[in-house]
Length: 110
Length: 114
Image (cartoon, rainbow over all chains, first blue to last red; front, top):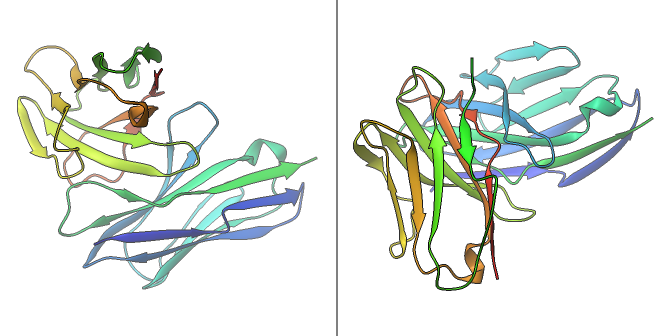
């Protein structure tokens, strides 16, 4: 059974203080790994897709990387508007739908 | 270009009543997914549908829950005889292709069972 574990559960940063969020996964075969952002009371919003180990994607202050067992979401010089829950999900080659982790709640204080 | 539309946004039901949640996918999308999110937990897959077909319902509870996506009209998630444990946010997502990881989510329907 697919497993996705995210750490830490919650993270509080000062504005400008860079950090990384971790997503470790167990799948039969990886079709893709996905990062989403979810604001309170809203639906998740797609950020990145990663397909193979060594791949990296960037968007503004966010950079996602992938190894064979985990993915990292690096946040460089975060701003308060980056505060949200970040969700990691995998699509197993034997499945038709994403399996999500429980998320990391990020709070960036000014 | 409207996104995924879910209604109602909030629904209150008493134990034993029925809840019907509706989802209209993005224009041109024929793949619909329903997920449930309990407080402080991640999204749990429930069911994946294409027009008129249930493709994967492995995440659906065996009893009281059903889903459909008719040829015309929105997808509907139906919960019969609701219990307090059904209280959650129910999210619908749509995609253009199967095997899609880039899902477009609605704002969710929040069910409260009294």
